[in-house]
Length: 138
Image 1 (tube, rainbow, N blue to C red):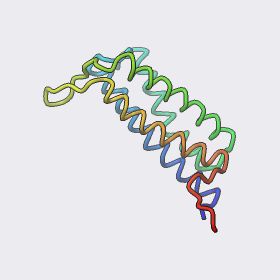
Image 2: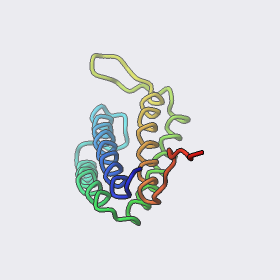
Image 3: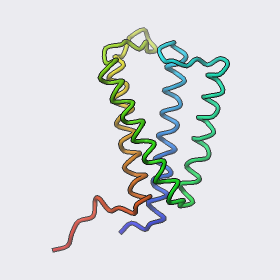
Image 4: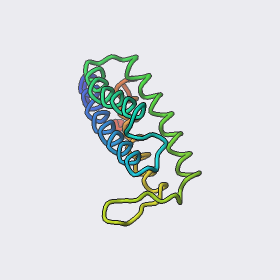
């Protein structure tokens, strides 16, 4: 049986991985000129704030701040909706990859969507103390 603290710890680790993946992806998209932000000026500040979130948010989750974790789960839902829009509206847009090949934006967004959904589930599981994988005993 999962303890409540363990759920927060697992959610914190999941959010840390999510944040690192998302930050690396956002920086890469900016570097190749596909995203709306650049690595210069205001864009650089935005990425620095994102890095700060990746450093601080997992610690707050780990400490078991219930309402922070719940609000963050809801914010990740908004990210999921945004990624869904990218999949629908920009599915075929090519993203240049190292080695000279391209990846359709929809495929990349679908991979990020999967990571975001897992993160959202882990945050909700901790924040609302859910047991979605618990088996009922007969």
